[in-house]
Length: 322
Image (cartoon, rainbow, N blue to C red):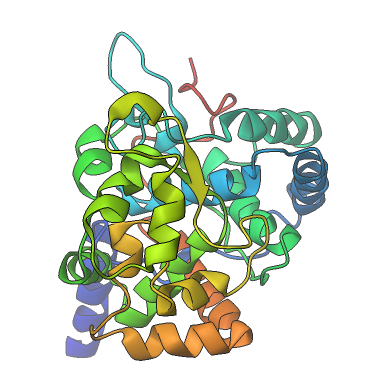
């Protein structure tokens, strides 16, 4: 009797857990759509191949970031995809997301194709998870099993989107604390930070570092200052996070060891801190980085998937169903 009670109590606590803990995998399954939409993964992958082949702006980085910003701020529920309405202001306009997230039109295209094949079946949250995986895989990174079965949120949490996401000026203690609050280890945090091996950043986000930090390669900072001065005139300039911005590899960590991290929050991972050994391992071993990144992405995808009330399978990822 006591054993049964303890099991039920544990199950209740898991069901009530908030965004600070990942749901166990038995709530989701890699084969969730095997019978209801067996075409799903093929549709997503073929569309992602098409999109990345025609991409000139590294949309893969944008979709990977979109997934992270959805999951890390309130759970993997596709709330970040919702447009503003007269009833609520969406997460897209929260400060970390405003004018910076992209890839929404790709999700729209995939959702349209999935709906044509499997009407009212696949959530936008699951599509986001698959596009993140395929973005990495198609850009020469690792693959992993995506656990599926999430529902879509009918509400937004702009407060979580505003305050839960790491910022470009975050130091190492802040980064460790923010990730630990979501159930991630220091290894998870460093591996997930390696997502910055893809894409570029805006001058406004790295200006303070290249003009004020001393833990930076002088030649690197001098080159960036030429296009990103202290004045706001050239705030539209961008720079890659590492030397291979269109390939998923460990150059991000090689650059950190060389003190060529683009933002303060990047270089915070290396230079006399607790996670220096992890950065050095990843800088020397691309396979170790890929393996740990894949494991951390599975964990990220398990952050508070939506069950119970206030959920649905959206027909249009930008708005709740009528």
